[in-house]
Length: 89
Image (tube, rainbow, N blue to C red):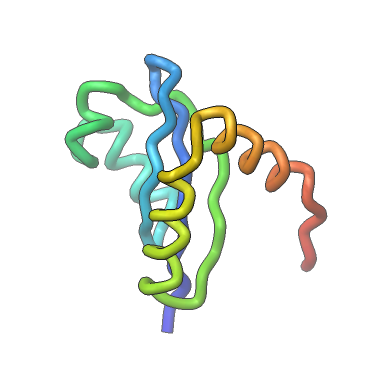
């Protein structure tokens, strides 16, 4: 069983797009090529802010919903805390 990821992208207009996927790099490339979500076709991504791993699609979908309820400042704070968290090998 593959892991699912919630990812956050910063778009050219400064907005933040949140989505789920099993392959973050492939999905980012799709967004950058204009073949991703309708939202990112008109607001191309500038960079990947963060991604979070989940065991299954249901868990990733619940997390995506919760993240989408945050304010833009809350989303950025979440990304900043993820960037500063130690990673285990």
